[in-house]
Structures are given as structure tokens and as C-alpha cells.
Amino acid sequence: MIEMFYPVIIFVFGAIAGSFLNVCIHRMPRELSIVWPGSFCPKCKIPIPWYENIPLLSYLILRGKCFRCRRPISFRYFFVELLNAVSWLLIWRSCGLSAAFAIAAVFVSMMIVVTLTDLETGFIPHGVTWTGMIFGVCVSVVNARLVPQGLWYHKLLASVLGLVTGAATIFAVAELGKLLFGKRKVRLAPGTVITIKDNRLLIDQPGAPLASRAGGVSGFFQRLADTLTRGQYLDPSCSSIAWDDIFNRSSDRIVFRAATLRFAGGNFKDVEVEISEKSFRVAGKEHALADAGVIEGRAEAMVLSREAMGFGDLCLMAMIGTFLGPWLTVLVFMFAPFIALPYALFCRFAKKQETIPYGPFLAVMAVIFYFAGPEILDLFSTLYGV
Ligand SMILES: [Zn+2]
Image 1 (spheres, rainbow, N blue to C red):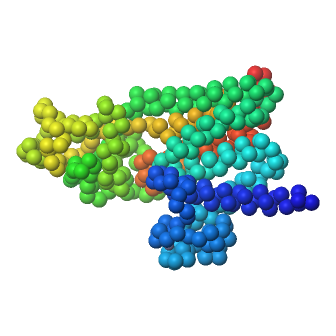
Image 2: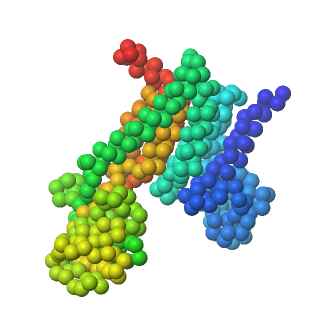
Image 3: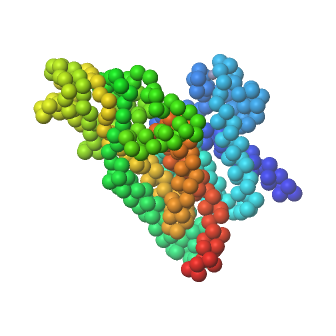
């Protein structure tokens, strides 16, 4: 009799879990506790009682507004609850109520948190990926996705190999990226003022340069050719960069030729400036950043170090590996660029955004391969007889 209500029960629990995922998405990148305090409005910070915090329904009844301050609550809250509820329902339809259901439900929910957090903040919380890794390895012994006909230790081995493979793919790409794109020369609009103060790099460009303003198809190709031949104009919205985002490695530097330069040590004209994390070098002489006060200069180009992929992506792929095993993890890594590339091109040339988060594409591909992977592997083996 109760079987009749299973779909409703699964959906409701999925929505309740989705509500918790929203808490994770909001709090984890801010390094706030996910268990205490209870829910509060992100705008007015007033606690929300449980009867105003019913998944899906509250959002609809209150029409997406906080009951106290009447300010709009992000549609993401409703979307994540619905997405998680529907996902759990679909997983239940394919797995029934089983260990496979529990594993898949946790995996998909974690991928939802990773995707939304990375999209909103460009940050993948280690709290999710590290918990996921431990969970993935622990449940691997009963995870039939890993080695369908294998014994428990075959599955455990596949899970651990998946972890290593996932981490290795991103590590290899990050190292390769340093070799290929380790330094990035950016052009700046004429008259740009570069200021360094309070551990930030401030770049004040007087208006976007003409070349990047041209629209349409011809503008697109003009920018593409321009970018390939002479380096890219720095995104004008990218006007204030925190020190930590520039100096990841001890070898990282900012280098530019300053038409004029001014700091506590004096005034300079047409000098080469090389800045590291704690000091800088002007005309062959080393100065401590702490003693220089505000540094202000004019330049038309600048060389920055850059990271191809971050540690967050590495942890994410390692976690994905524990659920998918080594072969599918490699496929996730190989296929993710196919969905990321169109989005990256769109962001670069339509929205003039420099970098895109890569985590969401890895996460989406991982979910696709988690469910369709065995069939895809079978297809490969029939096609190539491996
Ligand atoms: Zn409020």
C-alpha cells in the first residue's frame, strides 16, 4: 500500500535535502557553519521559522520574497530544491530503494552544490569535495557502478584508482598550462593608471578600447585576430585584483614598463617594474612593498602569471574518480571541454569575461557518465573490441 506513495515521499525528501543544499551553497564559500544557526534571510539576517521555510511551497506562497523585509530571495533557492527533488525521483525510478539509490543521490546532490557554488563564487568548497572523496571510497565496496561484476576489493581498488586518476588529470593540465600559458601579456587602454595599495592591484582604464567594442560577426573575428597576434585587452570590469589571486606561487610576478612611476622612493620615468609578493624592483634596485606606500604608475601593457586550473578543480576530479573509477573519470575529463568551450567563447567575446569556472562542466559530465557511463563503455568495447 505504502509503495503507492513512494514517488511523493522521494520527491519531498529530495526537496528537503535541496533546501539543505541551498544552505551549503550560500554558506560554504563564506566559511560559515552549515549546521548553526538555523535558516535566516540572506538580506535582513532575521531568522526564518520552519513554517516559512517549507521547501518549494514557501517560495511560491511568499512569491520569492522574504516575509519580513519583502526583499526578493534568489530564484536559485527554488531551482535547487526542485532540481534535487526531480533528480532523486529519477534516480529512484532507475535504482529503486537500494544502496545504489543512496550513493547516486548523495553524488548528484554534491554535484549540484559544486556547480552552483562555482557559478556564483568561482570557488569549489573543499568541504564538499573532501567529504565526497571519503564517502566515495567508503561506499565503493557496494558501488556496482565501479565494477559491475567485481568483488568488493575490485570496487575499492577502482575507487582509489579513480581518485588518483582524477587528481592526475587536472595536475597534468595545470602543469602543462604553466608551461604554455604561464605568463599572460595583457594590453591596457592608453592612459591606464596602475595603483598598488592595501594588497590590491587597481587598474583604472579610461573606457574600453575601440577594438573590443565592435559588435557583430566582423567584430568577433577582428577581436579574435587581434587577440591571437597582439595579446588581449584586459577586461575593463577586471579593475581590482586581490594580492592572493595574483601570487599563488613564489615565482609569480607582475611585470610592466611604466611611462611614469611614483612611490615613497621617488619619481621615475620610462622604467621596467617587476613586482613580487613582498617586494618590487625598479631600474635594477629592490624595494620592500611595505616601505613603498602607494605605488602609482602608467603603462600600456602588463605581464601577469596565471593558473590554468585551480586546486578546487583537482579535488573535484579526485572526488568524481572515487564514484566513477579510472576509465570513466578520464572520459569525463576529455568530454567536459566540449560543453565548456562554447560557453567560454561566449563569455570571452560576448560578455568580455576573461575566465570561466570549469567545475560546473566537470560536474555535469560526471553526472552524465555516472548514469550513462557503463553503456558508453560497452559501446566503446563493441566498436573497438577492447
Ligand atoms: Zn529578509
